[in-house]
View 1 (cartoon, rainbow, N blue to C red):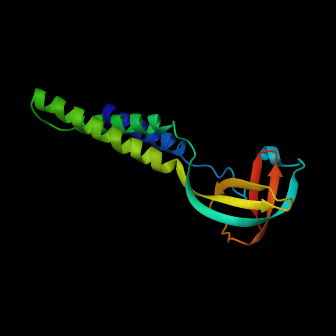
View 2: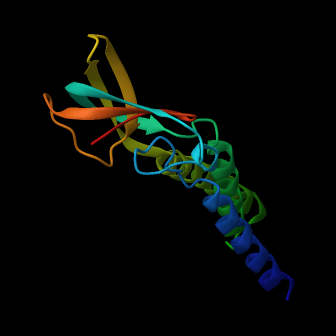
View 3: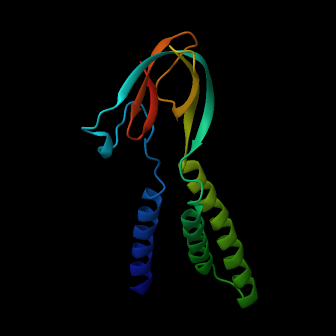
Length: 157
């Protein structure tokens, strides 16, 4: 009975921790945050000079949760293995380390998303660089708009 309860609680904790790794869509020209609603912003015309694919690391320091969950999963899996006392401890240790590395990798991958670095020339000649999620396509020479809102700058069509 205890083993079943523990596995159920562990499963719930695992699901809850992985939802914390989900990447938000902050910075997207298609998504506004609550604090942007009913606030004045500005809109300026500009021309795309160049685009460059980048990776946005939304939460670089949060792989600790993924590592901890991976270690716990590896240790629990290792504790199910039958064997001699010394061999059993080494198995638990090895699976805990492997689980930690796998959990850290998953957390890092979940916190990253594709982005665009856009260099644009404003009508007054200034050149600005804006990094945002890559959910709209832009071409050099294209006329676009720089949207300035409470949460920052965005380039949009």
